[in-house]
Figure 1 (cartoon, rainbow, N blue to C red):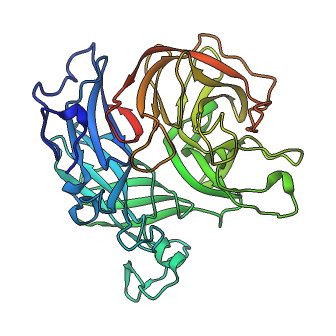
Figure 2: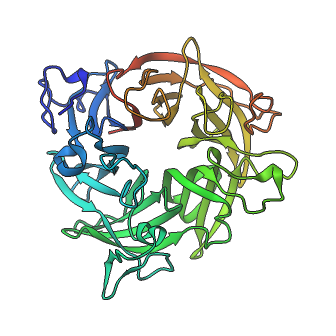
Length: 440
């Protein structure tokens, strides 16, 4: 069983490092971090990056997650804190199983996923593994009289539609103690789900489904990062529910429209809102264009910063923002957008002063203009040659609209690069591939 090298003196499967938690010290910022190919979530803190605990997914799914060297392992995506009605903090994480022992990583069972919540003692408090889609219009084909079980004879797409299929992100809302609502970016099923999960039941009831059946979902595949709220949202938007998402991939709606051919890595950042009971797209970035390709390259983590003295900011991990091709190469940036009402404009792509971002996955605002940036080091795979890291950086005081569009191209002609001051980093370099970071 592998542990982070940072935990030389610590145990595995959630055992605390000697010294305990540091959340009561106001000078310390506790964090929870997901390690994509390490199959684990761990707890750390600024300013020193000391790791206080870890939780390996082999503790909840030993058959699937215990043998990475043998080809059977689990991928860790978003880990988020959630405050329960009792005032305690759970950590909710999303993961998918992958089995290469059969020589194929694209079997219909590969990358089916689950959401797990850990209580303050790092014991499992609830899980979401199966879906009841009977209340929505879905491609899922379930067995008769059991909407929580997929029909084993169904075609692959219909079978996978009955499950969470490589879900990347989730947000918990409406927690009343014995049930809660979970919004899920169900990545490989190309949809956003609202799911009600009852205590003791690993099958959740899907109440809302946004996918290509909605006219505003457009050409979107692979939603992989989700910021969701109710009431006030980015740019002063007011909605019953709003969902800010990065869309990593797209598909071609019109093969004749060469400028808008979709594909892997041809991504967007989008804002959807539910108002008066109906969902609509508020904006997409970059906006659709018939004059030129209008995408960003493999976007991941999104974040919103509300500002009283100017337009709000939306940030995203522009994972291949400085690469040579869509969905290929290396070197990324952090995209910075200005949002005023329902208008979104481009500011710049941020890079680090004196350091490279190889494949940034997440960005998380702190106070006073500081950001945490997670760099996986590479797109994926075990044994990444380019090191993973967590960085603490600082945004410039003045952020203005650029005359450029911000759309990605190999030349970078429509992007403006701005160097950010590094407060500290690289941190957590002993992980496998860092994926996400959240403040506890």
